[in-house]
Image (tube, rainbow over all chains, first blue to last red):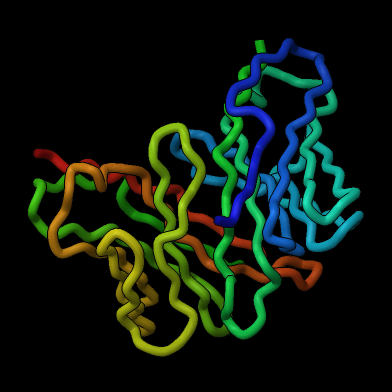
Length: 116
Length: 116
C-alpha cells in the first residue's frame, strides 16, 4: 500500500519558534508538494519540489522554506511561527506526468498546526 | 492561468437520491482533471481522473464524473447517495508551473452532506 507519512498529526507551537514539518513517501516519486488548507480557501500551494535539492515557490511561500535532501523526504520549515500560520498542512507526492499513468497526487494525513 | 472552480460551497442531498458536485475548469491545451475526497481530519484521497478517452469516468466508491469539453465542466456524480459519502470534495487540474513541472491545482472544495 503506497504511503505518504507526515511526522505529526497535531502540533502546538509558540509564536517565534522555528517549526519543522516532515513528510516521507515510499513510492519513489519525484514530485513532492506542501499545501496549507484553510476553510473557504481550499488548498493553497506553499512549495513544491520536482527533484532532490530542487524547489519551487508556490502561491504562498512567504514565511516558509523547504528542504529536500533525499528523494523520499520533503520538509517544510516555518522560520518564525506566527499565529496566522495556524492551519492544516498537507504533504503530497506524485510521479512526473508522462503518458497519463500515475498522474494523481497521494496525500499524507495532514498536520494540524496551532501557533499560540 | 489554469484553474478550477467549484461554484457550490455545500451540497445537500437525501440518502438514496442521485448527487452531483459541480466543477468547471480553465486550462490551455488538453486538461488532466481529478476528483479527491477528504474525510474529517484526514488527507485527501484520490477518487477518479480524466486524461483522455471516454467522457464518462468511473472511480472509487461508486462515483463517476463526466467530462464535457464544450462546457469546460467535470461534474462528479453518484446515482444513489449514502450518508457515508458526506465529506469535502475537491476538483483539481494538472497545471503547468513556470519551471516546466506539472502541479495539482485545486478548487476551494464542496462540502457534501447526505441526510438520512
